[in-house]
Image 1 (cartoon, rainbow, N blue to C red):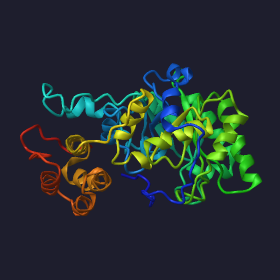
Image 2 (image 1 turned 180 degrees about the vertical axis):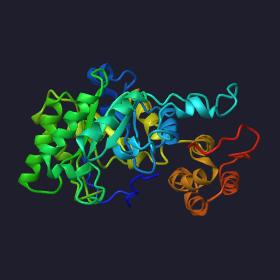
Image 3 (image 1 turned 45 degrees about the vertical axis):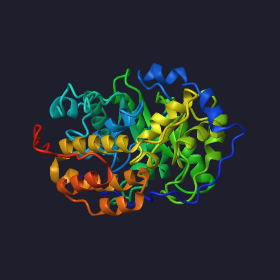
Image 4 (image 1 turned 60 degrees about the vertical axis):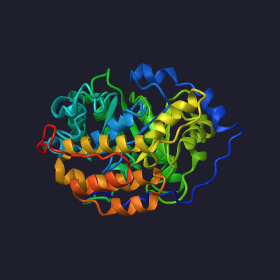
Length: 394
């Protein structure tokens, strides 16, 4: 596909610091109100949390499952500009309307797989040259993305001295050129946003580079930035600095600033909102295999107790996710892809360890049928031949 390889990302908390708040999470959640500017920019983005772009995970299937569980806004994984321009990933499998137009899963009367609306959504683009980034962003705008997000955060390995993602934090003027080109290329009614890390590494010069890009983004007309509170050099290791986000919000009180880093459960969403003052929270690793985090957040905001998923809800969500993945990626690729999701889903099972071990071995539809039949109650048949079959997308 010509897509950059997925780096190793730790899937468990690493060096997390307790973030104390003066109020309980329940009190915080009940008092939270969405900033009116957000939904004015992106209709439907009606709650202060969203699903981040996750390399190797956040495809259309994961996004649709999250939306059915209350997620108000999603971001694609980073799509390389050159790959988009060459007709690869992003032109087919990441199109937000692909499932709705081409897959047609399920009996509409049963309604289990109804609702293929993958909006509002941000197409996230990453690349090197301003002209190529502009063309790729314009292409995403033409594909009906609601927001164009520029990735200046990803700690992907530098390739042939070419800056990409977080490496632009070493070259702020070049980053500004990219942002200017993208903003000029995208229709004015479509928001352009930026994903940043708090610096490439520690040090006053690198912090100054962050602020040059951060301020430049708003000066160019970008709607908001999402700031990850680790440096590029940290990648995903060690605790993030929520204090940096707090200082950033205090320094720029009139700007929309979203926060990212160390969100592992629903309580963390509201702790970040309270402790840092950011306007919305990016949920990344904490929502893999846990789409219920968004429903739980809405329940807390409504003054209700957040409900853990029942075994039946887990089964149905697993089946929904599986069917969508098969429709999007085909049987062979879909079965393999769902292995990593199944491992994360297993943590919610009443007896998680044997389920996790079984999911580790999954590689075919038949394997899936066996695991779900054995551990999730009713006899089920994911990927059966009773419904329409779907060829691999081009």
